[in-house]
Length: 101
Image (cartoon, rainbow, N blue to C red):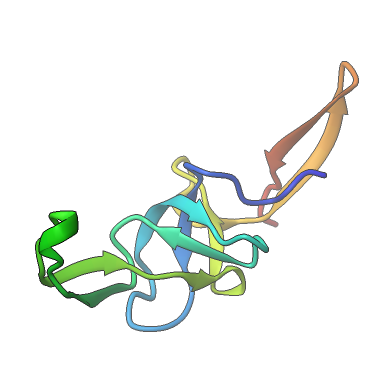
């Protein structure tokens, strides 16, 4: 099965605090309905120190998941959000950007 979003795709954030920002997809959730985008949706994580496991405690910043419906593909050439289509070439399924009308 082909997915519209893949790791390292440039995406545009459509809603929320980071609306209009652009970043790369780093990770998908297990059901592929949420993504982690590099430098977007930063939260504070409180970590307790555990001396037996040599874990240092403190307050850290990390990226949280964003729902896949809140992002769109971003094209470097046109600097706007884009739709993705699929076509077959040499018996392989290939993704491509659809042109804006």
